Amino acid sequence: MTGDRVTSDESKYKTIEDCVGNTPLVRLKRLPGETGNVVLAKLEGNNPAGSVKDRPAISMIRRAEQRGTIRPAARAITAVYQARVPQAELILRRVYGVAGAGMVNRHRVSRGWAWPSGDWGSLPTRGGVEAAFRAQLEQVSDPQAEAERIRRALASLTSPFRTAERFGVQDLIDPRDTRPLLCAWVRDAYRVLPELAGRPSFGTRP
Image (cartoon, rainbow, N blue to C red; front, side, top):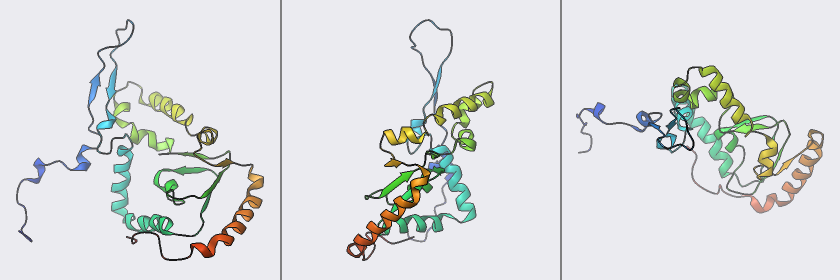
């Protein structure tokens, strides 16, 4: 009934938060070749959202709840996705996760450039490795060496050239060309702006 309080033992029921990180560690029984080594696999796909990124995500959410920053951040990103005006992004250095996704509306066409100094990904390697791979680091004899190995592997994936080759960014530019490119874009944006004025394209802001 409405207003009645459930008095059952809530400790018996897991929440989504309880499931993050408690993924199975299994032994691989069949390996090619002759080896006496035991190889273990951490099934991160068993996290609630199916990704190892659930680990740093739950930590970020807890911190944001404590600081009371979730609503202002959600309003800022929603405003970007509601805007009908032309949008462009220029990546100079670091951009990670949701903050990077919220720079422009990814659901519509926008202009983008990046400097060769760009560094991006789902999470920063400094500090992020320890959070995302905590369970793996706890299983090895030298966590520091293992963390450094993971950082090197991730660093090879954050190259702006690799991203450009896969069309993750439209153009890598010489920093000296930044001003003329932006000025040209502003002129084009003002030309189409009258056609785009109007109410937000969807929803309400939190």
